[in-house]
Image 1 (tube, rainbow, N blue to C red):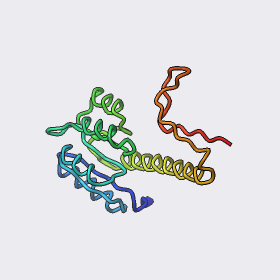
Image 2 (tube, helix red, strand yellow):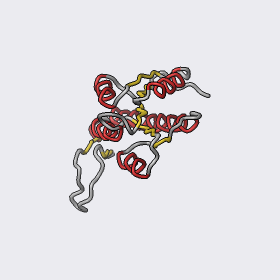
Image 3 (tube, rainbow, N blue to C red):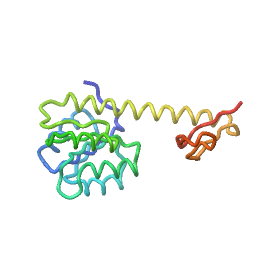
Image 4 (cartoon, helix red, strand yellow):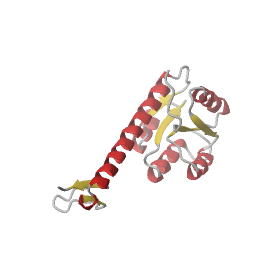
Length: 172
């Protein structure tokens, strides 16, 4: 098993202290920087104060549900990857996670960590691909700053269709 880069930060959110500790112990041994929260409200307070690459959250918890936390994370911190875990397997939970933008949903019990390991590896690979694109765009801007324009327009006036924010036009 390869070690992650030292900047990989994980936040584990579960009302079961045993599950949190199991996940924390597993990933600390692999070199991840990891914190835990026992509820979604505490997790949100931690997220507002510090940067994390990945959140691993239970769905069913007292107070704010994990799916509500997922929605808040995606609204305020869209680059954070979120992996949901649940012991209450249902189509409703799975669809709620998918609609909310979760990377995946993993069912408890966590007998082995292979599925969670794979989900974390995929999330970090995606994060690194985006970081590489940002570095490349910065390099383009430094080479020719006058021809680099970032459009914040949310709509394409000719077709009426939406276009992504931060569309880049590079002219010669």
